[in-house]
Image (cartoon, rainbow over all chains, first blue to last red; front, side, top):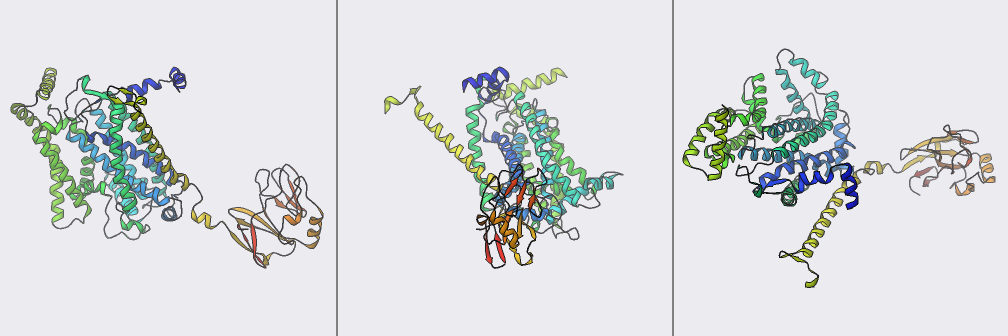
Length: 408
Length: 173
């Protein structure tokens, strides 16, 4: 074994790579389980790619055969039901894990300097993931698949002047039809590999700036421990917990995230009474509907996703550790999270009566939080410094403030 | 017992190694078990298996006529042999893969063979004397036995049985 490794090492930096990225990779010793969600996301990505490749062996991307081929997978292919439920539940699991990963980043301010690029590659990954999930949802060719794709492709009609042409181009026809299904299948197979490549970029960025930590302080060398074995074990334990929840849904509640209407084959002549997107799009869908104007709604929805990228500039506080030492920011974080759930609830129900008003208020709150953050964060910085902080946190904050003001 | 244990800095290393090995073993078994459904999904699905047998009505095949039927996606030649053909075949023992005609038929007038050349898998064409493979010129007689050409074996026989006087079920002996 050692001889083989030595032979490889003369020709390829295997041992140095493992040392640098795993066995010697310095990781803050105070990382909590909230830091395990990146690993979980990578694991779910692998589950989705593997189950997806096996599903593609039996699936037929043809509008006259797609729905039946799903039934074929469910009823006739050996373990087809398992592979399909792993994949359909995996999509929800992926978003649950990624949203938690993002919530951790927001709570602890992990997006702050010098991790802006890390955060932006993550934002790019989120967009790729949303596109992949959206296109994958068309493939079963059920009523929800069909009308979801119709509504979302129609959003592009809000583009000035050439909106109509863009929609026709996206669909490859005047309505969602066989050409749309075939191209969505092609891209749904391609995108996960783009995601995989983007994950590599995300990891290169991470290993350059290293993990943030709950205290936000730049730790001394003695406060870092090797990633392997300490965090491989911690991540694997987190994986065990995740797998219990994930597999419980796969085996006992596999239809939890599958809308009943999607068991009816796509019918271009009739829209189901209630079209609802998948749960992970509900808050953004609620924002889309809250704006009365079509173009305005589309723009608001796009901004609601993209605005996360601006966080390193919207948050002007130099207090480290995110919400931990910042009571006002912490309150804003919790309001934001609760508001997201409210938006999700609104998005899942028909927009009428009081819910319509709730949706409008929630949308306003959503954007107000981002827009007020630059002013509140700067005011809060002064307030917190005056009130007093743990010495290490205060020292780093004062150093960063001095550096910033020195440069100005 | 205790002398076998290696104690270092208060840690029992042999115990630690044992736990490590067991953990890795359980993990490996789990990964192997998780592979089972995926490998299995590539096997023929139940609708394919349902097509594993084919029933053939022989009443429409006149003496001297050959008809081809699909069975498990492969062509099966069914020949209603004439008394002269039967006599000629029973007199010979074939070519390089000698086999008596009686071992190749259940009823002398009905020859049932898989229509795939044993050389490289082409489908031979019917001739008066038997079959000629268009790919590399293998010649088979009216018992499906290889007479000349590169094919190493006689045409294979599918498992089948007579369900009634005029019906056979291919796929089950």
